[in-house]
Length: 158
Ligand code: DQA
Image 1 (tube, protein in one colour):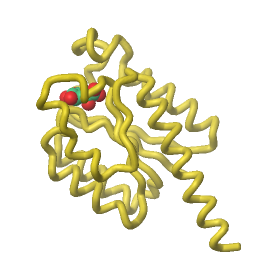
Image 2 (image 1 turned 120 degrees about the vertical axis):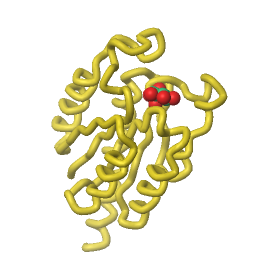
Image 3 (image 1 turned 180 degrees about the vertical axis):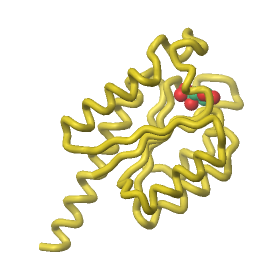
């Protein structure tokens, strides 16, 4: 089964950007850790980062045809205002392609404009506040969801 990880705007600058908030770890290192864990558990994993809302909508939509079984997304600043990304995720719900939302920082404890996520109501769950470990927890959650979907399919066939 294949998991797609989507990183939103400015996450390419992790390790340089506001290190006091987001920590010193680079995006490539976060991805590398996820790849190890995913592969150890028998999952394929792909990574995508963009600073552009429309490109992220495209990456979400492409999941319908490119064999993606689940998406882990940190929409970054787009979390707080992108109806387009919310709608793209909502479109996957009935397929179903489950989505887990991840944030490095605890958005509920930050500025008021960050406390609202337009994405949270349309995802399976949100993990926020554990630094790079949020991605690890997001991956564990996604693998659990996909294993449950797989088992449900198998028991339907039996
Ligand atoms: C973020 C939180 C967002 O508010 C912010 O715009 C980001 C990163 C996080 O991972 O904590 O770019 O999504």
